[in-house]
Length: 198
Image (cartoon, rainbow, N blue to C red):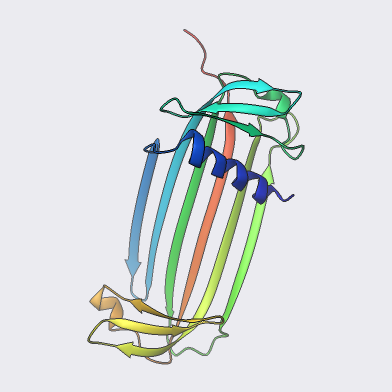
């Protein structure tokens, strides 16, 4: 099983059960534009506390901020499992970004590429893992609707209409141009030591 699958499975379990109906510990959204470019980035951080650890079953029970609990099974792929103990905090950080770039005159290859990478803790370190995925699509601008500020894009797999809300950005787009969209997501999960008692 790939690390991405492990981390995403654990993250899904945490976010849908232990943290269900919670406001995240922190959430941020940033938006930026430049001529022919636009980007939006969002980050979320969630935390839970380890209630108990069953080393024989490799089971970890986690409590979310509102007290709801979920037991998760950590497969053999989870390194340094023996370091996890009651009171430790599980920290989940998720980043999602979308960047659009106008390619004047087009001529590039219409394509979709995807890259996934991951890493996990080294022996002796606290258990942790990170996985990232980036999808890049280059599409042709096949129609421009000035009245509705819509552009029609034909990519390698489908044709979509995209509303361009910024009039300054819209006026730069012409039929025959290309738009390159890059979607990036990254998820990190780690264990932090239990806070020291005063």
